[in-house]
Length: 72
Image (cartoon, rainbow, N blue to C red; front, side, top):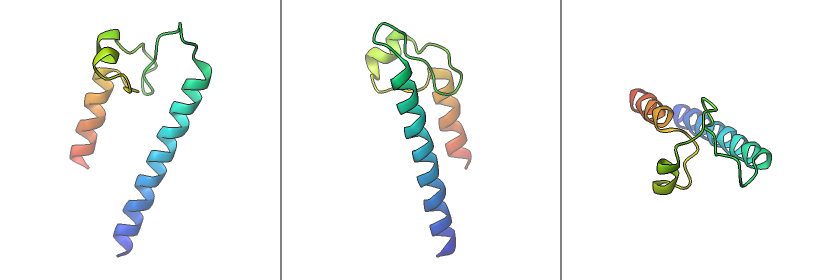
């Protein structure tokens, strides 16, 4: 049971961190400014944003994040 609680707390912490990063990025950006990746700070490709408007990472960083998640 303790392992499940620890895992839940880790997930909660990660989600909170991501939400804060998105909020900070949103407050700093203007509508004319390109959206930037949360991980590498490079602009997110307009084509990616057209397909996935809620994207917070560039494609390379998103693929890496998903690979890390699969390994965990």
